[in-house]
Length: 233
Image (tube, rainbow, N blue to C red; front, side, top):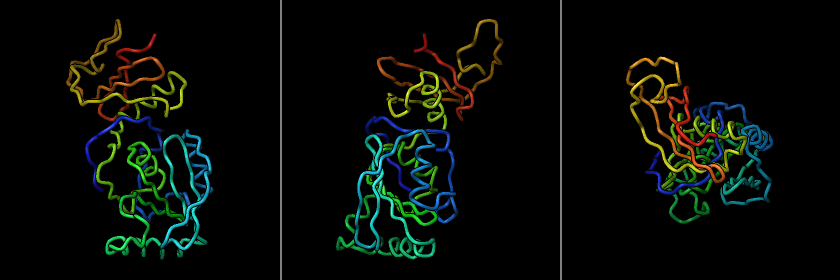
């Protein structure tokens, strides 16, 4: 997997399920297009079926799922054996094809799970991280420059703000984040009357915007502890 630096800031969709991962051929629990659609809804987004897709080399029509600025193509086969045959052929042909026979495959991220093959032609880190969590590691990841999937602590901060303000995570804009060594166990934000252990605590400083309000959150290294430096009334 090749990951380049963060180049632009886009709205993202993130939930706790993003922390999950699996290898491409280990069952993720998602076996069909319908199950993926349901899993996306459970992850807190609102996908829509948005037509069909047909590509050379896939031997079946795909269904398009769309949410926000993201769109994926899902190809559903009669069984895992057939899907495995197709995905193996795709991996082999992608690495050797130079004649365009696979309809521009090569700049897209491809996953395989159960009976399905999923394509995403985009660079949004949140979308890639979401699909990694649902489907496992990609079969193919050759995007030259992507929005970097966010560290778990940043994902946790976005989820915390979405819960706190009761907004869709996709409406939260990430302005920036940086690693910080906080001076104490309270992440540099002690509560009145609370003693904080004076130990260096690695973590993250995360800046976000939701609606017209800006927020700064402090987290520990993994996002298990989150404190609001500014933004809350």
